[in-house]
Length: 290
Image (cartoon, rainbow, N blue to C red; front, top):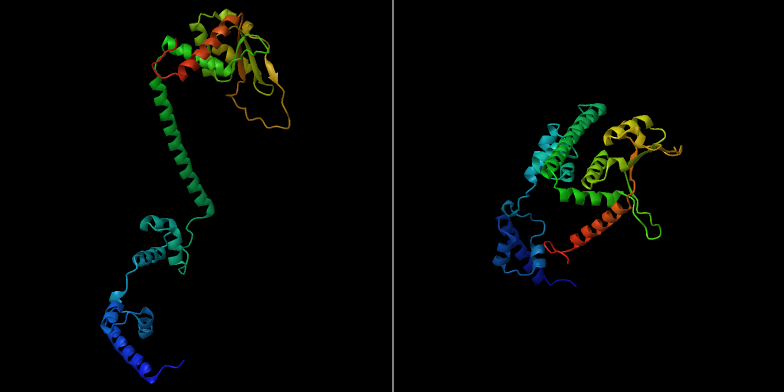
């Protein structure tokens, strides 16, 4: 439908006023109020093609960052350095400087890898030092054990690592097996606490057949302070050629089996003590059972 000449002329007159006000530096809101144009569609048509004055433009907060990023890139900075310097994302940096030439690599890949490896080794060294400090502090915090503490530790250690009686297989043997020399030392100290004579102990070394069998036998004999006559024949584990052994090296000495002769009564005491520990651990602190 065609507009009447009066309406068309009226719009053109209004547009001339709107354009003049725009070029005079007025904002959309000011023009709308001056001309009493409340319809945004009509206001858009009146100002079509006329750019807003500079003072109405909102500044872009990233303009300065973008300019600085480009400046640093031209100084052969890497994305990582620019990111640390400006605190913006790598994706933004990449977008801002993608038209700039890449900086020439100053180091070969081998040199860069060596530098990275040295940095990683230094970090591992720091971690290892922190790990050892934590362990040393925890060790010093223990101090000496009371008789009761050693007794409870020994019962718990045996119940975790020793043989146990089964309802379908009543044996009540005290047999402890472990590869950790520290665990073996604690177990022997616990037997001493209970008055178990060392003459009642028999030992068996269990080790892989491809290991240093003689060295392992000597090591365990020295650790427990027992004559070789108290050691039974070493049990050798056959090698499976389809598997790769990981328990190798000079620190691999297999396991030591310690058996207490005539240990049925001792076993009963161990089992009863363990269930006493379980009962005590499940009661509120400070309360005792009848």
